[in-house]
Image (cartoon, rainbow over all chains, first blue to last red; front, top):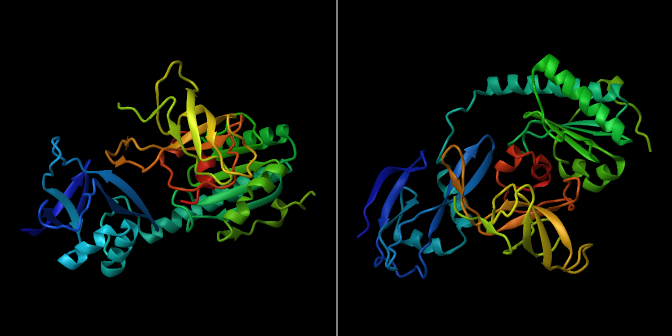
Length: 239
Length: 123
């Protein structure tokens, strides 16, 4: 007989609160094959990251030990029938029905602090764009991609016409970032047809014209907000 | 550490217009390494290919492993496991050969300086 209780489940130190119940092997005939893993949802900024973790509760002889599964607060037998459907739909239904946050990171900032961080990153991005413009990079675009991706705030996309020019733009950007802001980028150290400098909140992409047309990041991030730069940082596009 | 992808084992590629099945031959940066994990660059040979792509069967390529069935343990003690083994084909400079990347990618790729793959990923 299943017993419902509110408890917490710790997976590798992460704590998930919710309703857990013990699943007995002879309780439900709906399972053809018991699931060996379940997903937990994490809220990271505006994006949901789904992780698949492993439960290791199987007896080596093949019979099943009682396994723990997380359900909603009003779990019932009718809901059990949905477990055989796609787990994506199951979790979508759960989120729509309850709208609860299963896990929240403790380092979440207040909206005003987020805005301050965005403003700081924006000023950094605009300054890097100006440096690229000084080295005669073409078609410089600054995109606000924070609503689209969780791992950065701004993209700077620029075109250079030769590998020495890419090297010059990259080294000028690195020098200024290190001297003025104390930031050291990760990414490409050697000049490349697509050179990427990752400053964390700001990612700089420097392309040769063929690579820019090939990868077409502006179309991929078409829903991102284009930041208007001061007019002197936007030289006419060389065709 | 257990094995993730054993050399000479099949894996797939999740980028657009790329082969379906590869076999790993060698791991770059390690001599006689038997196992590979997420973020390793490998030499692979194409075993099965979809039609109308610029790559052919039996062609030797470089690829980066982006997903493994073997669980990956993070420093924050979270364990992530995928349903398949998957790679992204790259050229000699390290740039992806495809223009878009499908499927989930581990956050570890950004830490290993593969931000280009993360930039092109849909998820």
